[in-house]
Image (cartoon, rainbow, N blue to C red; front, side, top):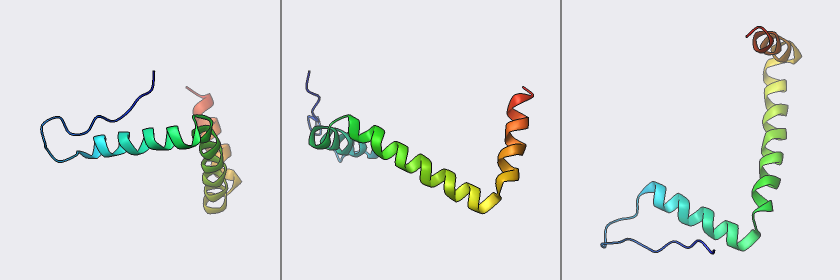
Length: 70
């Protein structure tokens, strides 16, 4: 089943949620579902590198201990 955005039902302005859905569906149709996984991995790596740079290795050790104590 192909998902498509149907447009505003009664001529109202598009909400942020509708705009996001429309953009996501357009991207999905243009690049495929695998694209989202690929950019997610890149973002996760960049975010991890930034956090490591900002807070240092000790930060990860600290949050690791907190997570393990639950």
